[in-house]
Image 1: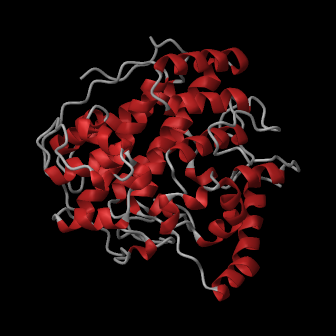
Image 2: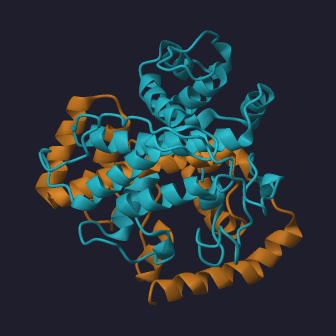
Length: 248
Length: 145
């Protein structure tokens, strides 16, 4: 695999984007906690496939996505359940419901795998969308690395989800192996992937590259760069979230 | 975050149109028109329209601002999906701080708004009296005000 390099793009792209994307591609190819490297890269391929899936297109255009039955256009050997998870989250996130999530769990997918799929999906989508937004060809997916998932599960998980659909860590984690994830207390959106702590670490790394260091999130007047003010950054974020139908 | 930042800077900005795709300008936020048009085009399927808005933004704000704006837009494609796919509620104090804005902007009608359950009046009162002042103090301190 050639490393990600944006120096030939049409725009002047700071090196930290390529560095961050390369770090993530390395993590993408490596075994995770609940997925092998091959499965993680397969999730990435399926994220790309979802955008041209006929069933997803029909569902997106339907009054309710549940009115349309059929099979997704696969790009991988992942299970039908994982393919449904990836395609629905990529193409129609604003209409996900607890009933849909419960149906996925009833099909036998573990919450741990679900969270890791979501973590991979999100990071690959962010990097691909960055490229699409700047008219850069998508980066070649990495070759998976051999090895097994480590099946790591934090000890102090709140199994009830504390109001979320998935189990997650408490908002304060003062000690133990997860104490590096955030300082003091944090919000749900950072805790959301904490059933698989490495997915939080990967998420925060890319968050800093694209947006802001999570430690600075409450500095609401400061901006990490002089290109955009914080208000300008939040304006873009708010419009994107509105068009995704995201309340959070 | 946006409103808190604006208020801390002693400004007042009408955010009415922030979530309305037909609104392409927020008075008081410099270059909001270029940024909102870019965000709209980024979220659409018309690549030619996206190219046009990119060019317009580069002309107004420069290439590096364009790259960072696309960086923010692309990372929120991820953050929105993480929030929606895990069914997380809004954090209590933040939800209360945004309650009026959510109603004004209509975001309380989104499907994902249903993940945040109404609070009993006792908890609402405690959050308003204790948690929100603490958060506002923390925001002021972290923001150097």
